[in-house]
Image (tube, rainbow, N blue to C red; front, top):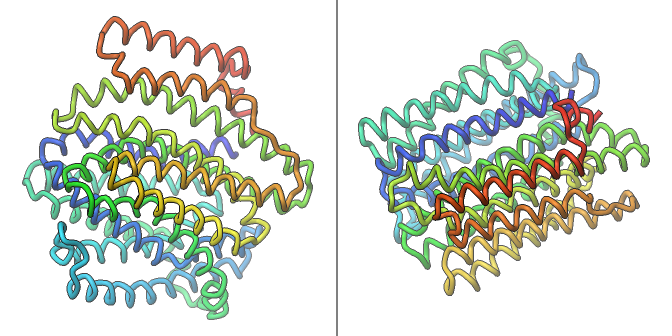
Length: 474
């Protein structure tokens, strides 16, 4: 079941990223790097508000959901948290619109001009939080997948129409997401109509969600800040054009983050359920298997992706965007730290360690902001990359330390990690030094790297059929 759900969750994250990835070449001709920079800054504000609007209700639902599929309290919790969040996000949207139109947020980006798009996008996102969380916890991975791809297809269809064909630029890109969300919300309301439009409201669930959720909301808020703080600082020290190139690189690397998030979404309910069994032996086995599974999926996909992306960008992107490749190479390692962080954090969620997340995120954000402020004025975008990497490493190590403290399990680094790390390091080194500019050398180097990777998977990890990976989590 975990592997089957993993496929749908990975596809749910990869499909939108794949569409975004495939449409980028068109957008490099329809948008200038400066316009990409504007979108990057507005995107940072949107992500910032998304974390704030959720209020941690999704984590409260994960924590409080009854295992029984037909528990009446589950219906009450769904109905109550959904409509409570609708009311809260409505008020917050009005307040933020007033703030964005009344104060100068940025000297280089006219935020007030795009305020209505940003606020509407975040409001509509807030409406999806509770329904999509319920689909995950009920392990309705297939329905989750269908809803996600429907949203993505609508959004990117309108991006092609409004941005590429009609040339509406930044406004067209922002409007496309709003249209996608409107379609998405319509599907959700129809799918959950029997629960949303019946009288299941119980204010005790709202009160509990507001008590329990905000601590995790702050943690999620800080987690998002780790991703977007560099945009706010870069906006002050580098040109909007360089910010746009960084945004493109981040978007390319996010294809890998989407893969890791898909794996994490599939593993999280599985790990939480096994943790609640209170069997140390079972938990030890589950964590080790999860780490091996994550290493195999993330490292393999990253190495293959890096070998192909260099060719793809140089053949399809406008030449003014080619320099984004160098940034992307180093950003590609960030998703791996996230995947391992999520394994340990899933156990902590099951133990109810909500205060720890605030601590871990605070330290991660602190490392990120301090390094950004120190490094960006001197080495620009590379300062943001280094800061992001160290922030994720900090959170992963802190989470692992707390996990070990609670479970007292003698965890060690999975042996597969070292082999994958060596192969990945060689790949990044060769690409960064542009050794692949020679066609002959590219073919030889790619053949050597892929042969090494396949041999490693086949002989060392004994992955000799499609069933071997599935059996890993049985």
